[in-house]
Amino acid sequence: MYTYIPKGVCSKKISFDVKDNKIFNVSFVGGCNGNLQGISKLVEGMNINDVSKKLKGISCNGKGTSCPDQLAQAVQEFIPKK
Image 1 (spheres, rainbow, N blue to C red):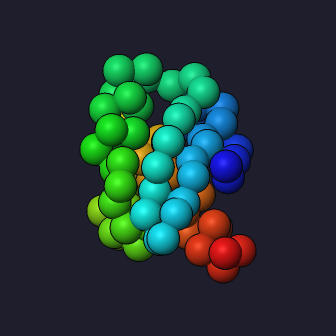
Image 2: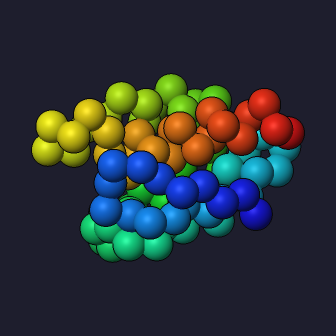
């Protein structure tokens, strides 16, 4: 289980597992519960590079980042550590 502390968003923690370059068990602490549950289910089993490409750069209310963008950043941080 990899844990990432997001910056600039309502969620306080993102956790996920990676097996064979695919993301599983994505969970967020805090943030918009329904939306984040939806994102977690949508990315389940996706290639981590695809998750990063699809979610990177999404902004929430002009913040310059969002919970999906922070997930992309978490994945990008994870990739060099594997």
